[in-house]
Amino acid sequence: MAKLGVAVLGVGEMGRRHAENLRRLVPDARLVAVADVDANRARRAADELEIDSSFGSLEALLECKGLDAVVIATPDKFHANAVKTVAAAGKDILCEKPLALNLADARQALAAVAKAGVRMQVGFMRRYDPGYSAAMKRIAAGEIGTPVVFKSIGRDKDGPPLSAYASNINGMLFYTNTVHDFDLARWLMQDEVTEVQAYTTVAIRPEVAQFGDVVASLVNLKFQHGAIGNIESHAQAAYGYDVRSEIIGSHGSIQVGSLHKTSATFLTTQGATRLLEDHFLSAFADAYLAEIKDFVACMLQDRPAPVTGQDGLKALEMCVAAEKSHLSGIAIKVGQ
Image (cartoon, rainbow, N blue to C red; front, side, top):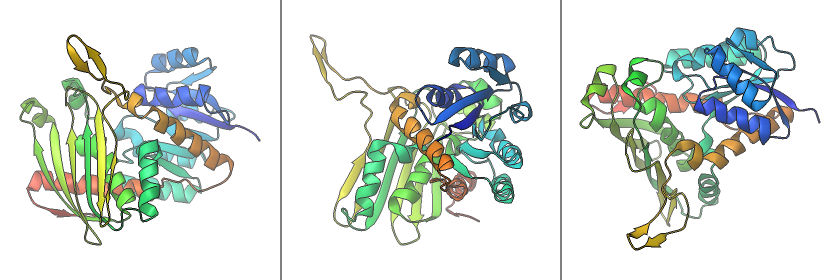
């Protein structure tokens, strides 16, 4: 079977991981090229990955021979336009989350994908994490009965520098962090969220407020069929990278995730210690690899993308509603 020719747009830490996986760990794929607005960074990545082609723009990348699909890993602000451009060129797409930073752009991107007849997968890699995947199978099998309560925590270790906020190229906390939990809420509860109410704070870093962002948030959820939920997001927990979820059902509960890097506890004269996760790329290394392998397999086998543009749109609707709630101080219906 022929290999899928894939290029990566954006070679920051996220795009670089996708490129490395494609180059080294996905036998059915061929990393054709990388591109970045910083052409020198693209060239360095190409050299280190031992591929010939790098580009300083998406338009140049799309002229590359042997290209079947593009992984979009640019900053959030540029996702929707990149999707439209890649779709118009007739290439399949894996787009990192969020699909866009507003609903109008997201819907235009989905329309472009439909018009071009290409396929698109959205990068909700937590669905591919072994723990979350196992939980989904057990929930679907009815092992905990009817899901009643969804709880999720997403805490990053180190907050972005102020320059990252000032650049205005990524969305606020709901779009960069909570969006993963919004997707998990829909997926694991097998239900749609109809209403959210957000509580936010900048107490430990008030200067973030001038850029329209927050340091931490709690978002309460109402689901269509009566379940409820709560999501905590924190941009700078300091102690480690901590992602955990719990789904409580009528007959039991499933808890997913751990902040421990290993299951080992180290005992010394100074006391006991455990190594904690400190970065999303290490915590979800297996998930990112499984995600890109599945994307490649689906494209080669002409199967639909398992995490669709509609999944991306539904999660984005929750982000938008949470932002509106943050600004207004009231509960907001999702999709309005």
